[in-house]
Length: 422
Image (cartoon, rainbow, N blue to C red; front, side, top):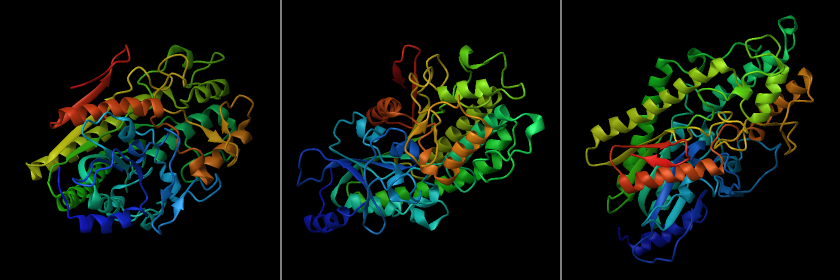
């Protein structure tokens, strides 16, 4: 491990004290610097959905604890850095300190620029600036980086809200009721009630643009690591994304009260799927999985490009697309309790009380609760993310990537629940 000049380390530690980070510290080590794993990226890395979120210091140096459900979503706390995130729970032999710099909703631009500089960003310093401060008194040996699902071309949250909103809107309104201005969670325009298609999620041009932007951002991270890690020994693990929904629903979620989602006005089915955490059309499932595969190809492409540019770099692409197989929402009876992803949930106003069932609601009630998500995104942003149990699985995947290394590690879940990596 590297040995840094103690004067520089001491000075930098003052800056680290005001940082927006979550740190798990091992035994005290004055020299050499503690071997450290750092998490960078978006919600699938920060621990969104895993609960128990830590206070986050904003770009002004003020620590932000939970500010209340009606507060601005730009508050640094809503980065949702969880002590249950995979970076914190993975077995990483040789690593003593773990630092979570990821932020829910992060985009490629947030690596080098403060998130607050763009619309819908949060008041945190750029992740590279935070990384520099960590590197001043830590020996960074592992970087877990998840990036690409949110970008200037599309975002995961927008895609999820659009597809769920179409299903709920179609189920609660008939063709004769289209005058009802009900729930477009994305931009307030009249709802399209047809299932999402590939074109609604992301097209080839958007994926290409997102991959180029993500490659440029990760390149900047690698440049900074080369500057701040004196021994030059660090592994960068680029993780892709799991899909919270299955390729096919369990039989009990296909029909309710004699109606499926190809019929007009199927409220009982909406209620059933919402309660189970999976309010989306059957016809949306295949496009959603192709979208996830597209994100995987994006991350794999970033890793391949940067390995070609930097033959000596230790870059591993961690494929986790099958890590939740058999335990996705509504894949088995008993959802969401047996799923590794969080159910889609909204609140009736910024109350802190999640609506678990649409059963007693009418269409105007539905509009009210879904408008809460639109007005106060923090009330629903945990939806369709890895749960604490899901992060335990992702932690096993990360442990394999740390132990094995190489260009690619693929992590998958067997029907028995066993997690394997190869």
